Image (cartoon, rainbow, N blue to C red; front, side, top):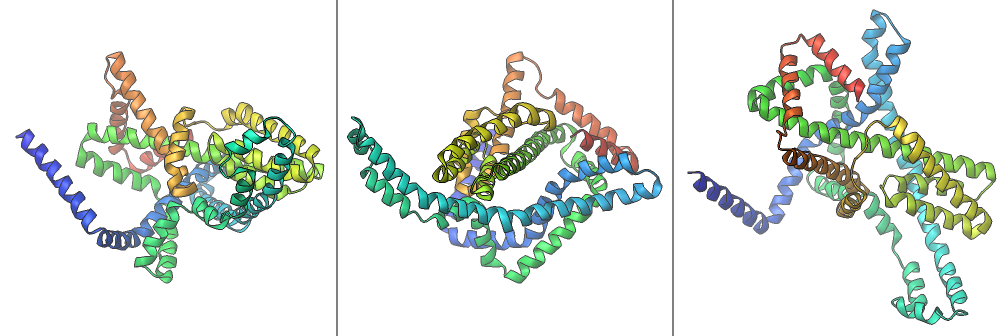
Length: 409
């Protein structure tokens, strides 16, 4: 009987793959309609999740300063408004200042790089290995120079910055109008505000439903996976966000004090590339130093030392102290995740790295538990028992438990 069910499942999956491949256009159209209908929910959940990160911090600081019954009632609404405003201000700065300046800096690099390629060629011609290096480059130095000048950086930047998000937007645009998108975003913001305002109640209701629907043990396993995913995303968002802000602002302030050129462009380059783990800081440092080097080689070398020192201060002193959670993902797997997620641009990279960290953590837990010969669900079972106890609490007590858990986060 079990074999018959297995064959049936395989057959249904194969049939579904064939039908999707045959009617791909209709499937994409239907996906666009469904995605457009779910857009308010998606916007609401994404905004609520991101805003919850500063919200937890603001609530802890609020409780230290304000006391009393009235202040306690106003804590959540005031902190939600402040958290949402922080998210909106960050998005506005990204759209109005950071992204345009990043594109401008890339165009400046493209304009200056060919001249330096020819300068390197002229220097190498006086060395014994000049002809060999020229032969190794496809098309030689002249071909490399022409390739750099003919690059369509506007298309590359659009793909890098949008990527998967732009593809999703095309699907949505095919099924919805601009007005409906605006309405969906507004509804999503209202939904996000409501979720943040009643998050303890919503969490308690969701837990009770899931415990009845899937059972305590199975839901405990599901909760463990979700908690690991949440820690990975939280660590990535907080770590990379603070790192980008700290390094970009620090580099910009020091450059302004020393009177270096391209202050804003280099600061933005360093900040944005820091969002990409492992390779991003190196790329930002190279591009920033190159820009300044074209105007003043001495200041370029000074900037190289400045950026290197700032990166070391962040990695060794600030990040371990102020960022509680880390990805815990080896560098080789971070590079693999960036490569795969790069298909979706910077949005794809931002999603791929935490997802890879989650998969790595879960697989590592199973492998370690198997090698130890013990059960692999001890932590999961403990979480399930906690949820069972929480199901019998009063709403106020449940809310306090959730708040304490988030405070620890």
